[in-house]
Each structure stands twice: as C-alpha cells, then as structure tokens.
Length: 252
Image 1 (tube, rainbow, N blue to C red):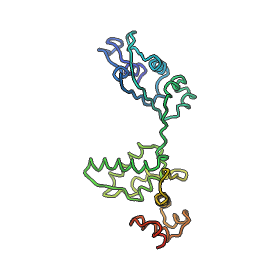
Image 2 (image 1 turned 90 degrees about the vertical axis):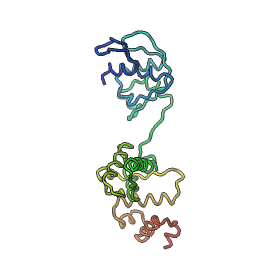
Image 3 (image 1 turned 180 degrees about the vertical axis):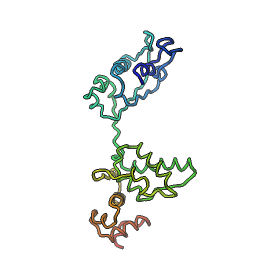
C-alpha cells in the first residue's frame, strides 16, 4: 500500500480530502478505541508514517487526513516483526525512538525447531482440523513424527501447516515419512532434537532413536550412530510399538 493509503487506514480521512474520498472514513485507531490494535511487520512501515505513529503513542491523539481536529484514542498497541528489531534499527528500517516506545514488554517467539513438542502438537492439531473437515481419520506414522523432529523448519509454523496439508492430500489412511520429501527434507547441517525440560529419559530415548533412524534410513547405520547393537535397536523399536518398559526391552 502507498504511504497515503496506510495513513488513511490507520487514522481515517474526511470526505473530499483526496481524490476518491467520497465519504468520511474512520481509521483503525478510531475504531479500536478501548481495545487492541495489532500492527504486523512494523519494520516495513515508511519512515514518515513511523513519525506519525510515534506521535500517536506519545500523545494519545491523532488527526484524520484532511482535517486538523485532534481525536483522542485509548488503544493498546501490539507490534510484530519477523526480523530482529535491533538490526532493523541499525539498518535504518525502524526508527530508534519508535522502537524504544514500542519495546515496553517484548515477547520473543523462538523458531519452531526450538519449541520442543510444539512441532508434534501443532502437526496433530492441523491434521485434526483436516480430518474433521473431510470426515476422515488419517494419522501420522511414528517414523513420520520422528522425521518432523529431524527437520529444521526454516519456514516455522506456516511451513509445518503446508506440509500437513500436502501430506494429507497424498496419504490414504496413514501419513508415511516418504510423503512430500521436498518439504520434509534434511537440513544442510545435522539436525537438533529439542525436548522440554522434565521430559522423561524414556521419551527422550524414543525420540532420539526414531529421529536418528529417520535421518539415516538404515537401522544398521542408526545403531552404529547411537552406539548400540542392531539387536538392541530392533528390541527397542518393537517395544515402542507394544509399549513395553525399557527395562524389559533391553533384557529381551
């Protein structure tokens, strides 16, 4: 959008203030009075509008395009960006004074690969939605879940959602790890396995084995990488299917 249109959308305009303004228009700040206004990709806002936004945040007032009458507003502002705001300031994309005015309570959202079991929970959530919409009961194979953890997900949640949609279309009843290989591809470097603090050693062991197997594609190679015998690997994989405790599986 052009800077003129962004200003009109944020602060509104009066009838006749510019070509095509055939009626009065209330902007987002006016309509959000008493509520919350979410400004996405704040670092993409033109510098001249950043100045006007800063003025609204400082004074609590704004003016519609085409008038000089100030209007008071009581709005909670949330701003988001997919880049480092400090770097955006250094690059001249974000005014430093606006950054400090917005940076009252920062919330850093870590990438999906660093959010532990969120990968599995979100994938299942997206699959549940599709199953409900289509009246199906498709599910992930255990090896597919391991493949999800082995992927770096540079596109974060959007990439995961797109993968689930594509795999859902291609799968019959079970989503196997070979589906959509161009999406669930191995990163250039060795993948990281994230687990939440407090996760049981049993669960950590299971995920590590399944993720290693998904990366290697060979049980013998996976056993070598894990430092266990091929027999032990087979025993553990069989036990994961049956739910046998680790003590019993290793004694088998």
